[in-house]
Length: 115
Image (cartoon, rainbow, N blue to C red; front, side, top):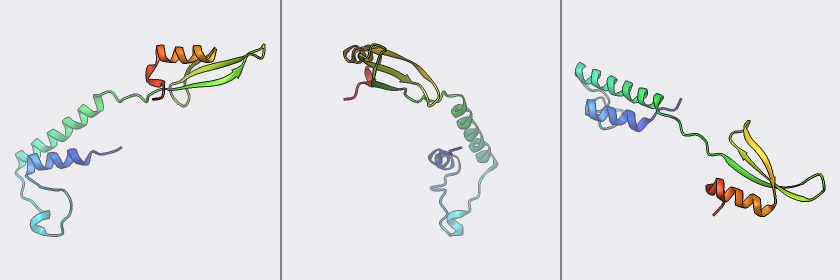
């Protein structure tokens, strides 16, 4: 699990008036008197941030698109378009002429066409 240090530091600044959470090896900079209501509001803010992060949808990895040259049973050149959703899942492979494969990609997934 990755912890958002910027968020934690922002909560400390807002609720405790602490400039940084880095150890500075000076008691006056590393130890702070904190009111219990500040502790409560900071804990509530951290809990809310975690709750919000857990319920927000994670962005799905962008699918990859492949155009590969192959041959059909009659030994004609064909181009296979494969949409790979993840390492283990693809949305099938279709065979086209090269021009039809590129047209299919442009029509259905214009973001897949390189620059």
